[in-house]
Length: 189
Image 1: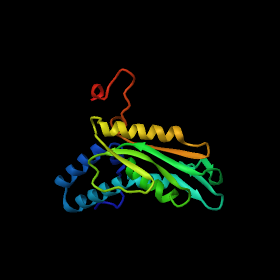
Image 2 (image 1 turned 90 degrees about the vertical axis):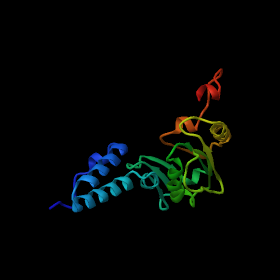
Image 3 (image 1 turned 120 degrees about the horizontal axis):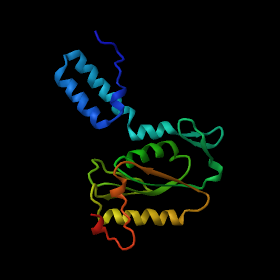
Image 4 (image 1 turned 180 degrees about the horizontal axis):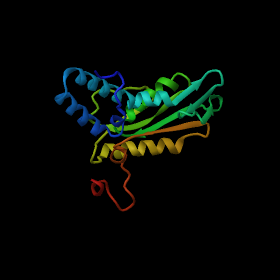
């Protein structure tokens, strides 16, 4: 009989391996172990969900009027000194990261910004003050370049009493193109 807690730490090491590993278990093991493998796979996916991870690592304390970041909460800002939060980013998980951030802080301090995300997102993303720029991945495109310029302009115009939060994940390098002088977007492609 298999216990409720099978060691699934290896599943969190590499998500591609995780998917393959679980797929093999499902095809080769008997029903009870297959069910445990599916449960383990779902737990592994939930453990690395970008929205959940951000919500677990960004805290607002109404008692102290502070925003804290990280599991140790060592990085802390007083909300009374912050007029707005500028949210910028790029990557395949950056939209989901922003959902978690907005859930924690969106009603506390006004948020605005711009995030470059892949064209293939399966949901329509809308926020009144955060622009989601659909861009190409893995080969950068003109839309990504436009989004990069928008993000850089927002950073340049940020005021001293604004907190800038950058949300970057895998794929950010192609979703946020910024060719160096003498190099064109076509060269990067």
